[in-house]
Image 1 (cartoon, rainbow, N blue to C red):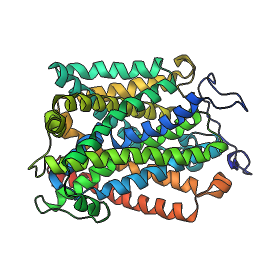
Image 2 (cartoon, rainbow, N blue to C red; image 1 turned 120 degrees about the vertical axis):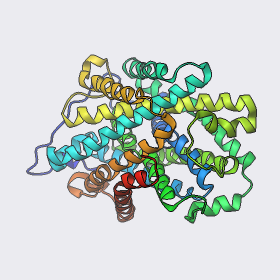
Image 3 (tube, rainbow, N blue to C red; image 1 turned 180 degrees about the vertical axis):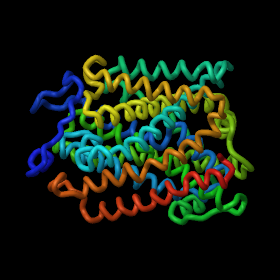
Length: 441
Protein backbone atom coordinates (compact mmCIF):
# COMPACT_ATOMS: atom_id res chain seq x y z
CA UNK A 1 0.00 0.00 0.00
CA UNK A 2 1.25 3.43 -0.91
CA UNK A 3 0.48 6.20 1.54
CA UNK A 4 1.07 8.95 -0.97
CA UNK A 5 -0.74 11.48 1.18
CA UNK A 6 2.54 11.78 3.09
CA UNK A 7 4.98 11.87 0.22
CA UNK A 8 3.62 13.93 -2.66
CA UNK A 9 6.06 16.68 -3.47
CA UNK A 10 4.89 20.23 -3.16
CA UNK A 11 1.90 19.45 -0.96
CA UNK A 12 1.81 19.82 2.79
CA UNK A 13 -0.46 17.13 4.19
CA UNK A 14 -3.15 18.24 6.60
CA UNK A 15 -3.40 15.81 9.47
CA UNK A 16 -6.68 16.16 11.24
CA UNK A 17 -6.52 15.32 14.90
CA UNK A 18 -8.41 12.27 15.97
CA UNK A 19 -9.95 11.46 19.31
CA UNK A 20 -8.22 9.80 22.20
CA UNK A 21 -6.00 6.91 21.14
CA UNK A 22 -7.19 4.79 24.02
CA UNK A 23 -8.42 1.43 22.83
CA UNK A 24 -5.96 1.22 19.97
CA UNK A 25 -4.45 -2.18 19.35
CA UNK A 26 -0.71 -2.36 19.81
CA UNK A 27 1.45 -2.72 16.71
CA UNK A 28 1.92 -6.35 15.85
CA UNK A 29 -0.71 -7.54 18.30
CA UNK A 30 -2.91 -10.38 17.19
CA UNK A 31 -6.46 -9.14 16.52
CA UNK A 32 -8.92 -10.36 19.12
CA UNK A 33 -12.08 -12.28 18.29
CA UNK A 34 -14.06 -9.25 19.47
CA UNK A 35 -12.21 -6.92 17.11
CA UNK A 36 -12.86 -9.27 14.17
CA UNK A 37 -16.53 -9.51 15.10
CA UNK A 38 -16.63 -5.74 15.44
CA UNK A 39 -15.16 -5.33 11.96
CA UNK A 40 -17.91 -7.49 10.51
CA UNK A 41 -20.44 -5.69 12.68
CA UNK A 42 -19.26 -2.36 11.29
CA UNK A 43 -20.05 -3.46 7.76
CA UNK A 44 -23.34 -5.12 8.63
CA UNK A 45 -24.52 -2.16 10.72
CA UNK A 46 -23.57 0.29 7.97
CA UNK A 47 -25.44 -1.76 5.36
CA UNK A 48 -28.44 -2.39 7.60
CA UNK A 49 -28.58 1.34 8.34
CA UNK A 50 -28.49 2.00 4.61
CA UNK A 51 -30.97 -0.56 3.36
CA UNK A 52 -33.13 -1.54 6.30
CA UNK A 53 -33.55 1.53 8.44
CA UNK A 54 -36.97 3.15 8.73
CA UNK A 55 -36.49 4.92 5.40
CA UNK A 56 -35.74 1.60 3.72
CA UNK A 57 -38.65 -0.19 5.39
CA UNK A 58 -41.20 2.49 4.46
CA UNK A 59 -40.03 3.09 0.89
CA UNK A 60 -39.61 -0.63 0.12
CA UNK A 61 -43.05 -1.45 1.54
CA UNK A 62 -44.55 1.44 -0.41
CA UNK A 63 -42.82 0.34 -3.61
CA UNK A 64 -44.19 -3.19 -3.34
CA UNK A 65 -47.68 -2.05 -2.33
CA UNK A 66 -48.00 0.39 -5.24
CA UNK A 67 -45.92 -1.18 -8.01
CA UNK A 68 -45.69 -4.88 -7.10
CA UNK A 69 -42.33 -6.19 -8.41
CA UNK A 70 -41.79 -3.33 -10.87
CA UNK A 71 -39.17 -1.60 -8.69
CA UNK A 72 -37.10 -4.47 -7.32
CA UNK A 73 -34.47 -3.78 -9.99
CA UNK A 74 -33.49 -0.71 -7.96
CA UNK A 75 -32.21 -3.06 -5.24
CA UNK A 76 -29.55 -4.36 -7.64
CA UNK A 77 -28.34 -0.82 -8.33
CA UNK A 78 -28.45 -0.08 -4.60
CA UNK A 79 -26.38 -3.16 -3.72
CA UNK A 80 -23.78 -2.46 -6.41
CA UNK A 81 -23.65 1.26 -5.63
CA UNK A 82 -23.44 0.83 -1.88
CA UNK A 83 -20.75 -1.87 -1.97
CA UNK A 84 -18.61 0.04 -4.51
CA UNK A 85 -18.72 3.37 -2.69
CA UNK A 86 -18.42 1.87 0.80
CA UNK A 87 -15.29 -0.05 -0.21
CA UNK A 88 -13.93 2.97 -2.06
CA UNK A 89 -14.50 5.44 0.78
CA UNK A 90 -12.80 3.18 3.31
CA UNK A 91 -9.93 2.45 0.89
CA UNK A 92 -9.37 6.17 0.41
CA UNK A 93 -9.30 6.73 4.19
CA UNK A 94 -7.01 3.76 4.88
CA UNK A 95 -4.59 4.61 2.05
CA UNK A 96 -4.12 8.16 3.33
CA UNK A 97 -4.61 7.49 7.05
CA UNK A 98 -7.09 10.37 6.97
CA UNK A 99 -10.84 10.63 7.21
CA UNK A 100 -12.92 11.29 4.11
CA UNK A 101 -13.65 14.96 4.72
CA UNK A 102 -10.05 15.62 5.73
CA UNK A 103 -9.09 14.39 2.28
CA UNK A 104 -11.91 16.12 0.41
CA UNK A 105 -11.00 19.49 1.94
CA UNK A 106 -7.30 19.00 1.28
CA UNK A 107 -7.87 17.78 -2.28
CA UNK A 108 -10.47 20.33 -3.42
CA UNK A 109 -10.00 23.26 -1.03
CA UNK A 110 -12.28 24.62 1.65
CA UNK A 111 -14.80 26.28 -0.68
CA UNK A 112 -15.47 23.36 -3.00
CA UNK A 113 -15.45 20.94 -0.08
CA UNK A 114 -18.21 22.99 1.52
CA UNK A 115 -20.66 21.82 -1.16
CA UNK A 116 -20.67 18.13 -0.22
CA UNK A 117 -20.42 19.09 3.46
CA UNK A 118 -23.60 21.19 3.40
CA UNK A 119 -25.59 18.78 1.26
CA UNK A 120 -24.46 15.83 3.34
CA UNK A 121 -25.24 17.55 6.65
CA UNK A 122 -28.79 18.29 5.50
CA UNK A 123 -29.17 14.65 4.50
CA UNK A 124 -27.84 13.50 7.90
CA UNK A 125 -30.33 15.63 9.81
CA UNK A 126 -33.21 14.34 7.66
CA UNK A 127 -32.06 10.78 8.18
CA UNK A 128 -31.86 11.19 11.95
CA UNK A 129 -35.40 12.57 11.81
CA UNK A 130 -36.53 9.46 9.92
CA UNK A 131 -34.92 7.11 12.45
CA UNK A 132 -36.30 9.00 15.45
CA UNK A 133 -39.70 8.85 13.79
CA UNK A 134 -39.34 5.10 13.30
CA UNK A 135 -38.44 4.42 16.92
CA UNK A 136 -41.19 6.74 18.13
CA UNK A 137 -44.00 5.19 16.09
CA UNK A 138 -42.93 1.75 17.33
CA UNK A 139 -43.14 2.94 20.95
CA UNK A 140 -46.44 4.65 20.21
CA UNK A 141 -47.83 1.41 18.75
CA UNK A 142 -46.71 -0.61 21.76
CA UNK A 143 -47.78 1.79 24.49
CA UNK A 144 -50.57 3.79 22.93
CA UNK A 145 -48.80 6.96 24.06
CA UNK A 146 -48.08 10.11 22.11
CA UNK A 147 -45.68 9.99 19.16
CA UNK A 148 -44.60 13.56 19.92
CA UNK A 149 -43.73 12.58 23.50
CA UNK A 150 -41.45 9.75 22.40
CA UNK A 151 -39.47 11.77 19.82
CA UNK A 152 -37.32 13.72 22.34
CA UNK A 153 -37.07 10.60 24.54
CA UNK A 154 -35.46 8.51 21.80
CA UNK A 155 -33.35 11.52 20.79
CA UNK A 156 -31.88 11.67 24.29
CA UNK A 157 -31.41 7.89 24.18
CA UNK A 158 -29.35 8.13 20.98
CA UNK A 159 -27.14 10.86 22.43
CA UNK A 160 -26.59 8.87 25.64
CA UNK A 161 -25.61 5.73 23.74
CA UNK A 162 -23.10 7.64 21.59
CA UNK A 163 -21.62 9.45 24.59
CA UNK A 164 -21.36 6.55 27.02
CA UNK A 165 -21.28 3.27 25.07
CA UNK A 166 -18.10 1.69 23.70
CA UNK A 167 -17.68 1.55 19.95
CA UNK A 168 -17.51 -2.26 19.60
CA UNK A 169 -20.52 -2.81 21.86
CA UNK A 170 -22.58 -0.18 20.06
CA UNK A 171 -22.15 -1.37 16.48
CA UNK A 172 -22.05 -5.11 17.20
CA UNK A 173 -25.12 -5.06 19.46
CA UNK A 174 -27.17 -3.05 16.97
CA UNK A 175 -26.15 -5.44 14.18
CA UNK A 176 -27.08 -8.56 16.15
CA UNK A 177 -30.47 -7.26 17.25
CA UNK A 178 -31.11 -6.09 13.71
CA UNK A 179 -30.88 -9.72 12.58
CA UNK A 180 -34.51 -10.03 13.68
CA UNK A 181 -35.37 -8.32 10.38
CA UNK A 182 -34.61 -11.67 8.76
CA UNK A 183 -38.28 -12.31 9.46
CA UNK A 184 -38.90 -10.45 6.20
CA UNK A 185 -37.27 -13.33 4.29
CA UNK A 186 -39.45 -15.89 6.05
CA UNK A 187 -42.58 -13.87 5.25
CA UNK A 188 -41.45 -13.56 1.63
CA UNK A 189 -40.99 -17.33 1.32
CA UNK A 190 -44.44 -17.98 2.74
CA UNK A 191 -46.44 -15.41 0.74
CA UNK A 192 -44.67 -15.02 -2.63
CA UNK A 193 -45.92 -17.35 -5.36
CA UNK A 194 -44.73 -15.63 -8.54
CA UNK A 195 -41.02 -16.38 -8.13
CA UNK A 196 -40.39 -16.18 -11.88
CA UNK A 197 -41.87 -12.68 -12.01
CA UNK A 198 -39.83 -11.61 -9.00
CA UNK A 199 -36.61 -12.96 -10.48
CA UNK A 200 -37.23 -11.34 -13.86
CA UNK A 201 -37.98 -7.97 -12.24
CA UNK A 202 -34.56 -7.94 -10.59
CA UNK A 203 -32.88 -7.61 -13.98
CA UNK A 204 -35.65 -6.20 -16.16
CA UNK A 205 -37.04 -2.77 -15.23
CA UNK A 206 -40.78 -2.50 -15.83
CA UNK A 207 -43.78 -0.67 -14.43
CA UNK A 208 -47.45 -1.23 -13.82
CA UNK A 209 -50.17 0.89 -15.37
CA UNK A 210 -52.00 1.37 -12.07
CA UNK A 211 -50.13 4.59 -11.25
CA UNK A 212 -48.76 7.52 -13.32
CA UNK A 213 -45.22 7.43 -14.64
CA UNK A 214 -44.20 10.38 -12.46
CA UNK A 215 -45.22 8.47 -9.31
CA UNK A 216 -43.10 5.53 -10.46
CA UNK A 217 -40.10 7.76 -11.12
CA UNK A 218 -40.49 9.54 -7.78
CA UNK A 219 -40.40 6.16 -6.05
CA UNK A 220 -37.19 5.31 -7.94
CA UNK A 221 -35.64 8.51 -6.56
CA UNK A 222 -36.82 7.74 -3.01
CA UNK A 223 -35.56 4.16 -3.11
CA UNK A 224 -32.09 5.11 -4.34
CA UNK A 225 -31.95 7.84 -1.72
CA UNK A 226 -32.91 5.31 0.95
CA UNK A 227 -30.32 2.78 -0.23
CA UNK A 228 -27.36 5.13 -0.57
CA UNK A 229 -27.66 8.13 1.72
CA UNK A 230 -24.26 9.79 2.27
CA UNK A 231 -24.10 9.13 6.02
CA UNK A 232 -23.40 5.44 5.43
CA UNK A 233 -20.07 6.13 3.78
CA UNK A 234 -18.93 8.73 6.31
CA UNK A 235 -19.78 6.29 9.09
CA UNK A 236 -18.07 3.34 7.42
CA UNK A 237 -14.85 5.12 6.44
CA UNK A 238 -14.55 6.89 9.80
CA UNK A 239 -15.33 3.63 11.54
CA UNK A 240 -12.52 1.93 9.63
CA UNK A 241 -10.09 4.45 11.14
CA UNK A 242 -11.70 4.08 14.57
CA UNK A 243 -11.11 0.33 14.25
CA UNK A 244 -7.44 1.01 13.35
CA UNK A 245 -7.67 -0.57 9.89
CA UNK A 246 -4.42 -0.45 7.88
CA UNK A 247 -3.21 -1.62 4.49
CA UNK A 248 -3.43 -5.19 5.78
CA UNK A 249 -7.18 -4.74 6.11
CA UNK A 250 -7.92 -3.95 2.47
CA UNK A 251 -9.25 -7.48 1.91
CA UNK A 252 -11.32 -7.19 5.09
CA UNK A 253 -12.72 -3.93 3.75
CA UNK A 254 -13.82 -5.56 0.50
CA UNK A 255 -15.32 -8.62 2.19
CA UNK A 256 -17.15 -6.57 4.81
CA UNK A 257 -18.51 -4.15 2.18
CA UNK A 258 -19.88 -6.99 0.06
CA UNK A 259 -21.26 -9.15 2.89
CA UNK A 260 -22.88 -6.26 4.70
CA UNK A 261 -24.41 -4.89 1.51
CA UNK A 262 -25.79 -8.25 0.42
CA UNK A 263 -27.25 -8.73 3.89
CA UNK A 264 -29.13 -5.44 3.64
CA UNK A 265 -30.12 -6.00 0.03
CA UNK A 266 -31.62 -9.43 0.64
CA UNK A 267 -33.70 -8.17 3.57
CA UNK A 268 -34.89 -5.26 1.44
CA UNK A 269 -35.88 -7.68 -1.32
CA UNK A 270 -37.89 -9.62 1.25
CA UNK A 271 -39.74 -6.49 2.39
CA UNK A 272 -40.54 -5.36 -1.16
CA UNK A 273 -41.60 -8.84 -2.30
CA UNK A 274 -43.94 -9.60 0.59
CA UNK A 275 -45.48 -6.12 0.34
CA UNK A 276 -46.06 -6.77 -3.37
CA UNK A 277 -47.72 -10.10 -2.58
CA UNK A 278 -49.91 -8.94 0.31
CA UNK A 279 -50.59 -5.19 -0.11
CA UNK A 280 -50.65 -4.68 -3.89
CA UNK A 281 -52.50 -2.91 -5.37
CA UNK A 282 -52.47 0.00 -2.96
CA UNK A 283 -54.20 3.15 -4.13
CA UNK A 284 -52.08 5.64 -2.18
CA UNK A 285 -49.21 6.30 0.19
CA UNK A 286 -48.75 4.33 3.39
CA UNK A 287 -49.58 6.57 6.34
CA UNK A 288 -49.53 4.32 9.42
CA UNK A 289 -47.43 1.64 11.10
CA UNK A 290 -50.28 -0.94 11.16
CA UNK A 291 -50.25 -0.88 7.34
CA UNK A 292 -46.53 -1.71 7.35
CA UNK A 293 -47.03 -4.40 10.01
CA UNK A 294 -49.97 -6.07 8.28
CA UNK A 295 -47.93 -8.62 6.24
CA UNK A 296 -46.21 -9.86 9.43
CA UNK A 297 -49.55 -9.96 11.25
CA UNK A 298 -51.23 -11.93 8.47
CA UNK A 299 -48.39 -14.43 8.26
CA UNK A 300 -47.39 -15.03 11.89
CA UNK A 301 -50.00 -13.23 13.95
CA UNK A 302 -48.98 -11.49 17.16
CA UNK A 303 -45.57 -13.15 17.30
CA UNK A 304 -44.74 -11.85 13.84
CA UNK A 305 -45.76 -8.34 14.85
CA UNK A 306 -43.59 -8.47 17.99
CA UNK A 307 -40.52 -9.70 16.09
CA UNK A 308 -41.01 -7.10 13.36
CA UNK A 309 -41.40 -4.32 15.93
CA UNK A 310 -38.19 -5.37 17.70
CA UNK A 311 -36.33 -5.50 14.39
CA UNK A 312 -37.72 -2.16 13.25
CA UNK A 313 -36.74 -0.44 16.48
CA UNK A 314 -33.24 -1.99 16.34
CA UNK A 315 -32.48 -0.97 12.76
CA UNK A 316 -33.91 2.50 13.36
CA UNK A 317 -31.65 2.83 16.39
CA UNK A 318 -28.67 1.63 14.34
CA UNK A 319 -29.47 4.03 11.51
CA UNK A 320 -29.98 6.87 13.98
CA UNK A 321 -26.63 6.20 15.65
CA UNK A 322 -24.89 6.10 12.27
CA UNK A 323 -26.45 9.24 10.85
CA UNK A 324 -26.02 11.32 14.02
CA UNK A 325 -22.37 10.29 14.27
CA UNK A 326 -21.78 10.77 10.55
CA UNK A 327 -23.03 14.35 10.58
CA UNK A 328 -20.70 15.11 13.48
CA UNK A 329 -17.81 13.13 11.95
CA UNK A 330 -17.94 15.26 8.82
CA UNK A 331 -18.23 18.61 10.57
CA UNK A 332 -15.36 17.87 12.96
CA UNK A 333 -13.17 16.48 10.18
CA UNK A 334 -13.81 19.41 7.86
CA UNK A 335 -12.89 21.96 10.53
CA UNK A 336 -9.87 20.00 11.75
CA UNK A 337 -11.23 19.19 15.21
CA UNK A 338 -10.72 16.08 17.29
CA UNK A 339 -13.26 13.42 16.40
CA UNK A 340 -14.13 9.86 17.27
CA UNK A 341 -15.75 7.67 19.91
CA UNK A 342 -12.47 6.37 21.30
CA UNK A 343 -11.85 7.82 24.70
CA UNK A 344 -14.05 10.09 26.79
CA UNK A 345 -16.28 12.80 25.27
CA UNK A 346 -13.91 15.46 26.62
CA UNK A 347 -11.18 14.30 24.21
CA UNK A 348 -13.40 15.18 21.21
CA UNK A 349 -15.86 17.79 22.52
CA UNK A 350 -16.82 19.25 19.13
CA UNK A 351 -17.64 15.80 17.78
CA UNK A 352 -19.89 14.96 20.72
CA UNK A 353 -21.48 18.40 20.71
CA UNK A 354 -22.16 17.95 16.99
CA UNK A 355 -24.06 14.74 17.75
CA UNK A 356 -26.30 16.74 20.08
CA UNK A 357 -26.90 19.47 17.50
CA UNK A 358 -27.72 17.08 14.65
CA UNK A 359 -30.09 15.11 16.87
CA UNK A 360 -31.74 18.24 18.28
CA UNK A 361 -32.45 19.57 14.76
CA UNK A 362 -34.01 16.24 13.84
CA UNK A 363 -36.21 16.36 16.96
CA UNK A 364 -37.40 19.86 16.00
CA UNK A 365 -38.43 18.62 12.55
CA UNK A 366 -40.24 15.61 14.03
CA UNK A 367 -42.15 17.82 16.48
CA UNK A 368 -43.81 19.78 13.65
CA UNK A 369 -46.61 17.17 13.64
CA UNK A 370 -46.06 16.15 10.01
CA UNK A 371 -47.02 12.56 9.29
CA UNK A 372 -43.72 10.74 9.96
CA UNK A 373 -44.40 7.79 7.66
CA UNK A 374 -45.59 9.87 4.71
CA UNK A 375 -42.71 12.32 5.20
CA UNK A 376 -40.15 9.50 5.25
CA UNK A 377 -40.49 8.84 1.51
CA UNK A 378 -40.07 12.55 0.78
CA UNK A 379 -37.06 12.80 3.12
CA UNK A 380 -35.34 9.95 1.29
CA UNK A 381 -35.91 11.69 -2.05
CA UNK A 382 -34.44 14.93 -0.69
CA UNK A 383 -31.48 13.01 0.76
CA UNK A 384 -30.77 11.71 -2.75
CA UNK A 385 -29.85 15.26 -3.77
CA UNK A 386 -26.70 15.01 -1.65
CA UNK A 387 -25.43 11.87 -3.38
CA UNK A 388 -23.67 13.22 -6.53
CA UNK A 389 -21.42 15.80 -4.86
CA UNK A 390 -20.29 13.34 -2.19
CA UNK A 391 -19.75 10.46 -4.59
CA UNK A 392 -17.98 12.65 -7.16
CA UNK A 393 -15.45 13.80 -4.57
CA UNK A 394 -14.70 10.20 -3.53
CA UNK A 395 -14.39 8.99 -7.12
CA UNK A 396 -11.97 11.76 -8.06
CA UNK A 397 -9.71 11.02 -5.10
CA UNK A 398 -9.92 7.24 -5.50
CA UNK A 399 -8.89 7.52 -9.15
CA UNK A 400 -5.91 9.82 -8.46
CA UNK A 401 -2.61 7.93 -8.31
CA UNK A 402 -0.97 10.85 -6.46
CA UNK A 403 -3.27 10.15 -3.54
CA UNK A 404 -3.88 6.44 -3.85
CA UNK A 405 -0.74 4.97 -5.35
CA UNK A 406 -1.32 1.29 -6.13
CA UNK A 407 -4.68 1.43 -4.37
CA UNK A 408 -6.27 3.69 -7.02
CA UNK A 409 -9.43 2.53 -8.75
CA UNK A 410 -8.96 -0.01 -11.53
CA UNK A 411 -10.71 0.40 -14.87
CA UNK A 412 -13.76 -1.67 -13.97
CA UNK A 413 -14.41 0.09 -10.67
CA UNK A 414 -13.92 3.45 -12.36
CA UNK A 415 -16.49 2.66 -15.06
CA UNK A 416 -19.05 1.49 -12.51
CA UNK A 417 -18.38 4.47 -10.24
CA UNK A 418 -18.71 7.05 -13.02
CA UNK A 419 -21.91 5.42 -14.29
CA UNK A 420 -23.36 5.65 -10.78
CA UNK A 421 -22.30 9.29 -10.43
CA UNK A 422 -24.05 10.11 -13.73
CA UNK A 423 -27.19 8.19 -12.70
CA UNK A 424 -27.34 9.80 -9.27
CA UNK A 425 -26.86 13.25 -10.80
CA UNK A 426 -29.99 12.69 -12.86
CA UNK A 427 -31.76 11.41 -9.74
CA UNK A 428 -30.73 14.51 -7.77
CA UNK A 429 -31.93 16.88 -10.47
CA UNK A 430 -35.27 15.07 -10.72
CA UNK A 431 -35.93 14.68 -6.98
CA UNK A 432 -37.77 17.92 -6.21
CA UNK A 433 -39.73 18.19 -9.52
CA UNK A 434 -40.91 14.58 -9.19
CA UNK A 435 -41.90 15.18 -5.56
CA UNK A 436 -44.12 18.09 -6.64
CA UNK A 437 -45.54 16.45 -9.76
CA UNK A 438 -46.39 13.25 -7.87
CA UNK A 439 -48.22 15.19 -5.17
CA UNK A 440 -45.79 14.29 -2.39
CA UNK A 441 -44.82 17.93 -1.72
